[in-house]
Length: 385
Image (cartoon, rainbow, N blue to C red):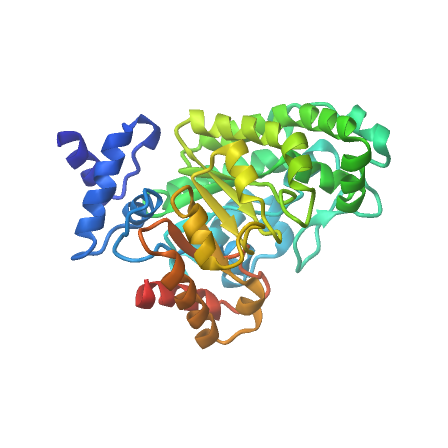
């Protein structure tokens, strides 16, 4: 009981304990206590998320707008500045958190961070997300996979700057909100350097060459994951986009990327952090990713391949992982606040029972639209959650 009361005191004071050092039965007891207490009083964001991820109902549904670059408009910071300068990016994230709020702050720049440090040329548009130079892919043919080597992580520029961003944000808001890191899985990184369609073909025709490339770059990704863990984050998200019908068959994904994704997940878990998966593809392979990475949560935009309705999703996976999502980003971009709140209510009604659901967009909040519907997300959690 003394250890339980100590955790409660730490959380109420806005400090975050190292969950990896807390025995499982104590976490379960704390979640049950917070769920009960949440019937009469407001929980802190950290209490709320912890209770939810232990599959207990908190005072209300946790919510995150996944604001990311969308908050640039608050500070008037350009995309290139946001994506390359940790201090300015931290100002963006912090201003979004202070203005809009959220129980989680998801740190995400763009999907070319890792590829850039391996040597892929990246284009930085003034008002759009950085992307690889598709006219100049680093891997120009299948023999290029065999030329990839681990890089000196200490000299990587974009990954090191992202780690710096994580460290700043943990200091600025990590005691008030759950801060989540992010990295792209090895197949995603290869897709940035080869082009997704060409890589898909290579996975079918030359799977061993692609796997050798995954084996070459994964040690650097493990260092990237470890560096993020060292900043004091609560969780790190792994983006395994191609574990969906948008990418490879389920069997081929498990063969090629699954073993390397497992290594990354284990590195995160051994540091006492939770593992989240982000996959905004259609027909996501929940079952394969759970087998490979044993995540605590999955952030998704579309229903998994083996579920036809949100109710079936909750019944099949609701007791295995925390579901994070899945308000459509086109609705956030084009819908009215009333339409957004109605969609939130529908998802809360089906997915929030017995905890294990965090309300969020299916992917990051569209970066070049007004923040009106980010507030709609927050309001829906308060009203219906």
